[in-house]
Image (tube, rainbow, N blue to C red; front, side):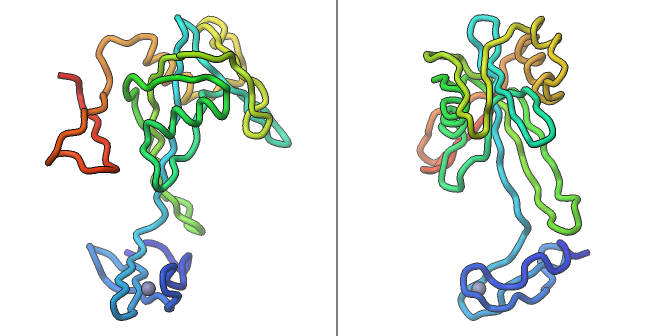
Length: 200
Ligand SMILES: [Zn+2]
């Protein structure tokens, strides 16, 4: 089985045409250039979303395309050189004007790369955050409205993303703590690494 056909033809580091070689149980595009060693495992990305609580209200943002609009929890992609916790706090501030602090991981969605023309895979990690300061305002670029809403209000809104709704219900029904950031420990975590696990 191949990773996929033809989506990447040249090495992104040295420009050499890639060849298909068997590695790790399947054929993959790999760079044959001496000393390069690039192997294309596919395009994996990481997204993150935030259930931000202020009292018992939750922060939602409105997104729009040319044809529709809907509400969801704020969030976005994690940059390649960015730790995930600052990334979600940054997205909440950018998209909704709210300064918030991560408390724990609520859950994640893994989307396997099933589109044959450009297979990408993505993990979307949802955090619970506590609002610290600020009043909701959209950025008028990716978000066009923002506000805190009670569960009752959210249930009456017709266009809330089903995954956002799922995460909000988990946070509000919380019985057990979610995964939490393990404090940095020499020999366990390395700079740039963050580790999350069940609370002890
Ligand atoms: Zn190369």
